[in-house]
Length: 77
Image 1 (tube, rainbow, N blue to C red):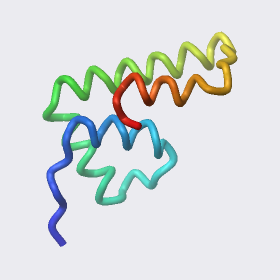
Image 2 (cartoon, helix red, strand yellow; image 1 turned 120 degrees about the horizontal axis):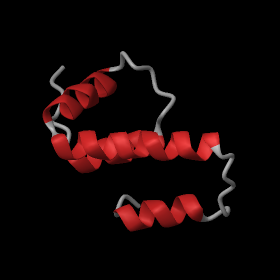
Image 3 (cartoon, rainbow, N blue to C red; image 1 turned 30 degrees about the vertical axis):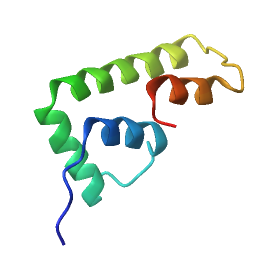
Image 4 (cartoon, rainbow, N blue to C red; image 1 turned 135 degrees about the vertical axis):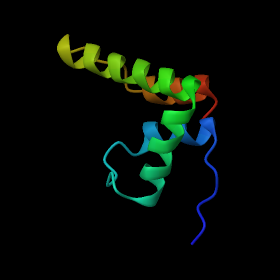
């Protein structure tokens, strides 16, 4: 089975939507490879990780519609 080349937008969308997916799935393996080759996505992923860590560390509460606003802002909706 041939796996299609994943774009930066696919990577961002997948990271936002499925943080709990099996890391050995074909899609996750392709994403790992993409992150190794694409500095833009790698930087984006690092910033998402830092943001998540910050929110966990300081127990930040978000408004209920914050996720939808973020997805719209990133153009992933």
